[in-house]
Amino acid sequence: MTTNLWVEQSWYDYKLSWEPREYGGVEMLHVPSDHIWRPDIVLYNNADGNFEVTLATKATLNYTGRVEWRPPAIYKSSCEIDVEYFPFDQQTCVMKFGSWTYDGFQVDLRHIDEARGTNVVELGVDLSEFYTSVEWDILEVPAVRNEKFYTCCDEPYLDITFNITMRRKTLFYTVNLIIPCMGISFLTVLVFYLPSDSGEKVSLSISILLSLTVFFLLLAEIIPPTSLVVPLLGKFVLFTMILDTFRSV
Image 1: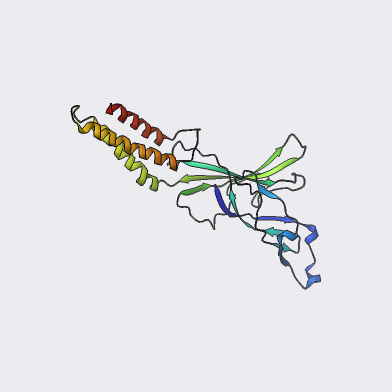
Image 2: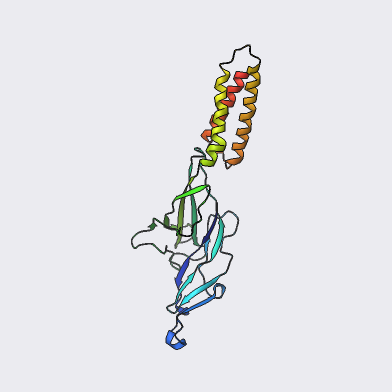
């Protein structure tokens, strides 16, 4: 899954605080982010090897020591796909962010909208600038703060996991794939009404078989390759091909 987003981060650095009246009333500064300390927040389940934000944009410093940094980033993350009900499927992809170096005692990682006493934020992503996808509808994006212990260390390691639930838009596949496939499959039933001595019976069966083969190859190109499950649409096309083959014999 490729995601174009802004990674909003904020933290307090006491070394970057100052008294405004001693500096001409200046309360805020914009500084290059590579000149200050930054938490090394990375995407754990990245799929292209780029763990960190590559564009070093400027950070905003407040006189209280609060630092805000909103760099843009394009992430490619791994996602488990269940295509059983394709194209009427719903997928949940995970994006797991956390510090690669610092443990939970050094960097207390929390969601900006997280309330006290809970580790779950129902709306974990700001979708106000989201560009509507022509293929997917986003249903929900909760964020969960996790605390994990590894066998190597006694300290906890924190991460924030975003569970992105999406539903595929079906109009394109219904018009260009399902309806033509159903029409060709309906012709398979009509073959049984042709007389056995009809010479067109075998020709029609072979034509239907070739058409279904094309649809099956097209379906294999559209669906992500997986050996976990066979889509119901693929089972239907395969069954119709077998039925048409036996009818042609």
